[in-house]
Length: 246
Image 1 (cartoon, rainbow, N blue to C red):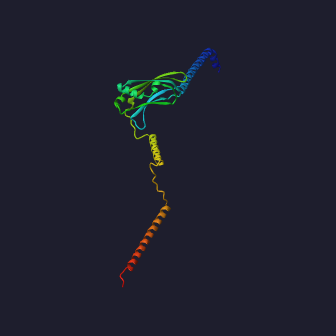
Image 2: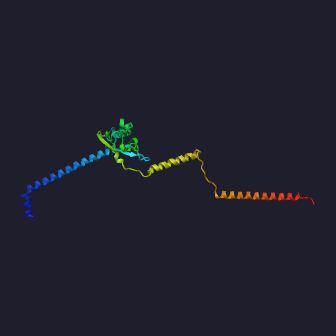
Image 3: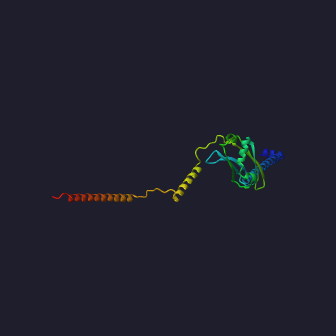
């Protein structure tokens, strides 16, 4: 114990320097971690309040060859004063015609004042079975600019590569579409029945009704048979009375 105390007394200055250096390093590391956490918190806040636009190509449920553009705000904040500048990246005249078909909707020209989170707008449609090869080779882009609610300005170029649709196919009809078609047919059938266009064919007889009907039919047959027998007897009597006199 005495040796340890003597060592500490002789090296007190050096130990103080080492301890101070360790505290300084720890403070610097803590400050750096705090700055990282503040930066991540700021980024998380921006993600939760800032808009983000994307564009995809989607087909109709009932016809996979009919497609249109879907412009969505996938961010968690509204996009304000959205402007669109469509352009052709590749594909020549086929791409120019395709772009003209897609952008026939007016919002591509006048923009959007408010585009809320989760909101979607769709373009006009095109049929891929017309000039298929030319459309599949087309590459388009939408240069979009918009502002967030915090006043931050964004500028993105959203690329539409039509070649991504090559090889896509659809088996059968989607469940939601098939259900909708079935409900529509049921509605049409009910309307025809209620308006008298088609009459319901229904057997409303019960077992008692059928038994009563059979009994009535049997009674009619018995009555008919008695009448025939009576007629035959009367004819026989007439024949006997009209015979030659003795």
